Amino acid sequence: MGVITSTGREAMGWVSEQLVEAAQGGDLESITAVVHGAHPHVRRFADHLCASPQDAEDAAQEALLVLYRKIGTLRASAALASWMFRIVRHECLRRARRLLEDAADPGFAASAEDEVLRRLEAERVAEAIRALPDVQRRVLVMRDVLGQPGRTVAATLGLSTAAMKSHLHRARTAVRARLHGSPTL
Image 1 (cartoon, helix red, strand yellow):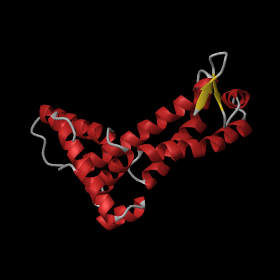
Image 2 (cartoon, helix red, strand yellow):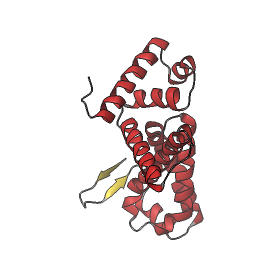
Image 3 (cartoon, rainbow, N blue to C red):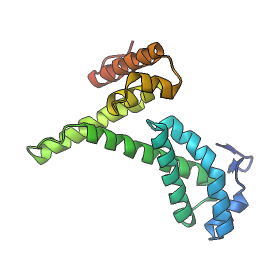
């Protein structure tokens, strides 16, 4: 997103350091310009991390709201890009965890220990899914977590049904292997 300049500071192509500093100081026009300029970059990053286009848009909007409300707390103007991407990543992961928790059986937890173990297992599954290549991750989440029909998943991602099934098979195999500690094929 940015490049390191000869002074060692990150320069962002979509926003000047002076504009960020003015926004940090509370200038409403500057804040609006920074948020508007950040949207396409934040959305593109969210598209790569989130399970669905709707989650990506929601995560991007949430990140932009945080930016709008809290830009004054940003310590260094050059850290804007990494700060925004951390917010987007956190929001996408939060949404994925919620999907996994909603999909899990909300049955009875016999003890606090059982609840901790369930959460740890859900985190292992979420980590295995996050490690997948982008297309495989999206196919797996849309098909297995969201329960969308295969044809819908294929059409949404611009894949043939056969390609979608192939990506789904590879994703399931990779997740299974990661969870059981064996190498993927």
